[in-house]
Amino acid sequence: MSRLGTIGGRLHRGEISLNFVGRQKLWYSISGLILVISVVSLLTLGLNFGVEFKGGTVFQFPTKPGTTTSDARAAVADSGVVKEDPIVQKTGAGWRVQTESLTSAQVTKVQETVQHRFGLPKPDDVSPQSVGASWGKDISQKALQGLVIFLVAIIIYLSIAFEWRMAVAALIALAHDILITIGVYSLVQFEVTPSSVVGLLTILGYSLYDTVVVFDKVRENTRPLLTTKSMTYSQAANLGLNQTLVRSINTSVIALLPVAGLLFIGAGVMGAGTLKDLALVLFVGMLAGAYSSICIATPILADLQERQAKYRDLAKRVKSKAGSAKRQSRAANAEATAKPAADGPESEPQDTVPGEEETDAATSVGAGIRLVQQGPRQQPRRTGSKGHPSGKKKR
Image 1: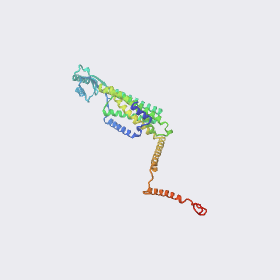
Image 2 (image 1 turned 45 degrees about the vertical axis):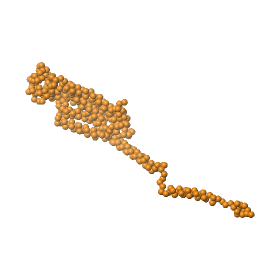
Image 3 (image 1 turned 90 degrees about the vertical axis):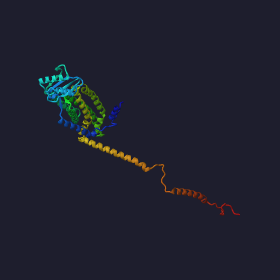
Image 4 (image 1 turned 90 degrees about the horizontal axis):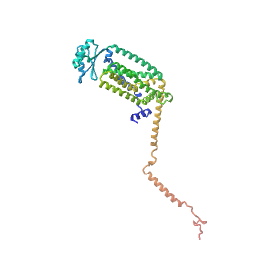
């Protein structure tokens, strides 16, 4: 059995425990800091929307090896018709340059300039594509509608299958994942494309899947609590979280490995494109989802549940019972420690006053001598009829 499997078995049996629920303030502080940074970034930097959302013209063309990003940007800018700074991305053996919306004459001018700069056979080797902002707007509206329907369905399902507090905790963790993912996009200025929107909707399902698995184990552990009164709701929830911890880690790692491969291939080999946009949002969202399902969703659930009177009373009883057991244990240990000290070693002789031992010995010897000496003196005298000791008559 692997080391991780051994640890997982001990976690499941409760032999060892990581106190995730008891340290909720730490997790809340970490998440709060990340969320504040994300919100500030969104308000100041905003999002880098792709051409599909704001409209524009995209040029794709091949180049010779050794061409840099600055060379591709300068080739388009030198046409004299582009006012804004072009966005340049590497695409395998060529380049993808995004500009504002251009007219047909301006597009032709850019094609000719790029052709002469890189020595392309003909202007048609520079492929233009005009994209309207309405297409991205339609995609965004459809995605928003799908998100609302998804959230409503999740609330209904979790409220029926589990309870409404679990639904609330799961949705808070879900909002946490979405906001962090969008915040990372804002911080690093990843381009937001329709593929990014699709990936964002995908991570919602992944995040909820892991959270629901943990909640199912928590429900199993907390169901008999009010009868057994053996632990608090937070302790039972933390036990359930530990029992599914290794599974959550394995699931997250297995899910992230292929996404990381897609991200490497999309960004490092093929350059910018749909593959890169999809992999970026999936990677960031899955990391946030793995963290929230362990450190956010279950602690929030425990906090919501222990607001109920029955679980508050249960916590008081368990705490009182634990305190009584500790006091009894300390008293037993103190008694066991004090008893040998009071009795002392059995083979150790009692203390005597100096000279007392010799006096006692002499007294014993003297007493023995007196007993021996008293023997003859106490024997009865033999007297005859005439008073002689031998009893014979005196002649």
